[in-house]
Image (spheres, rainbow, N blue to C red):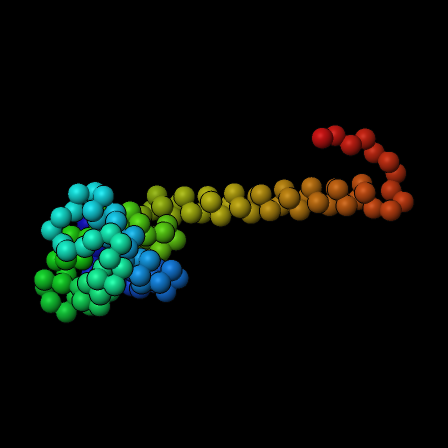
Length: 137
């Protein structure tokens, strides 16, 4: 399954809006080099150069060469994107993932209900004038 260039662009721009283009570009460059990437001129720590290449040249995708360069970066991009942004890419939108997200939501709701019940019991037990009850730790 192929990820469309426009979707990668959208995800990277959303992430960069949160952390800044410089941070995102360096994270991508570091991961690209770490996993053995050597076809692109990216150097960890060269913030301005990495940001210019990734965000101001290649990400626009106006030429096939720009799109190819982003595809070469895709393994590194997928590794560094935060989960809440990475899920926007089509390869992650599966029935199984949707089921896991629904389960995650249900667990969160159950935990909230549990905490509300504990708080109600605690409040009732410790309100002024309440009958002393045995407290367990």
